[in-house]
Image 1: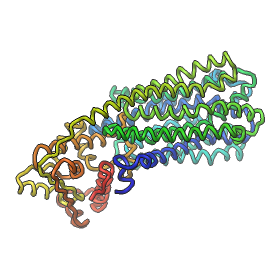
Image 2: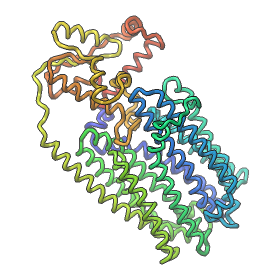
Image 3: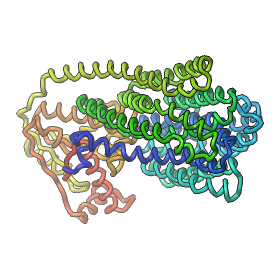
Image 4: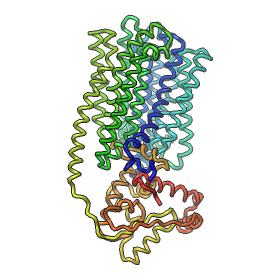
Length: 629
């Protein structure tokens, strides 16, 4: 048994967590570099007003992420469900709707910002020292670059919705790397200062968008994704279905935007406001390191928690959560210690302005006490999302930034001024973490009761029926052999007959079960782990697996039979007298057979054999933890 094969079933929790979390953390590090690039390179100019301009514009720029989340996350969910119901038309309508609707909304926002730029920036705290910088920055990243930014984000989610997680990760990486390369060119070589950072960001997002358009062009014949306007639809199940799922994610991003804007606006009203805003900008950007790494760990294990929860493996859920909390606690404590010891050094990396360094050092020391609470809060939130409790997750997000943070900003500003504002984030995240901890304790108690009840349940009886479970290479004739054996023994043979039963049990379309009942979405384990999972942590293929386990078990208890494929040998290993057989043949014979018997001539027979066998092997590894063949 290889290490990768055991991931969801029996791999030691530590290794499973590492295998899923490390790639996600790596992708988050790319996001961190992307986020820090503008602040770092602008900081080398040594002008706190330009750093302050980034702080002022950040909440406005974040609106683009909110727009993307509103449409792409909902479309991801609808496309996955539509594929499971073999409703290709709805999936096409959803992908077209999410793309064009997001472009339209972004275009409207860009026009409004262009027309009302000055009053909007003054409202967000710009003054005579920062107004020019903020206007130049937003002109390039929002007015000109808004559509490429949103289009790239939406296209990335659409590509991920059909299992192309590798391509989605590459698109994100391209954007981050190009931003880091282009920033110094436009800022220093072309001497454009903050406007140069904006142009670099706009071009990076445009390059990322073009990459995703190329990917879509390559896969459009073999996937349900389309950007064709003819599929654009406002029918309720498409438009409302998309918006209702994406709304919580959009609200979460908007709350971040509002909270940053509120705190930054209050800082700007105090004496030396631009210095305070610059110090807050550097502090919050450094905070993204802790934020994104903790999110990477928390989101990385979501699929493992969701899968184990769906499989009723409550002990594994507990073990994964416990280890994740330990890792996050150690990380956040180390991060806190580093910031407490060298805050001035960290600020100096971003800006060489003595007054900003002094203020930023104090700000960062106080802010950093939020890291432990923030990291654990992100983990609690991911757990609730993984097990389908999205309402609890949304409630926590609204309480944290919409209620606690906002109230503390106002109260602490009145009572303690700047000193109070510097402690807002730390107090907010500590309080939010304690609330999440209470809700998690209640959830854990409910799981413990469920686990105790399942432990007392009577185990499925071992049947005395004799079963022949046939696995086979594609095109080797396993189905034909199974039917002939069953006929000679006078017992039923279940092959394609299983599809109807699994469809009834799972509620999914027969065509979808036929396509994915024995084939993984991807040849790569990680792609299968994260692709197409809904709010309950399960993908449509997971649902097929659980349904066919029940159907096959019921058939074995009903009477002796022959079962072809669908991991029957593994499913019945402990509950039936089961003879397992693997049918194989030479590539030449199989290639000849799929042409003469199946009539499949649309592609190279040898390549089709290779692709089918690889996906059968990946499916078997994913759900059994053992070697196919």
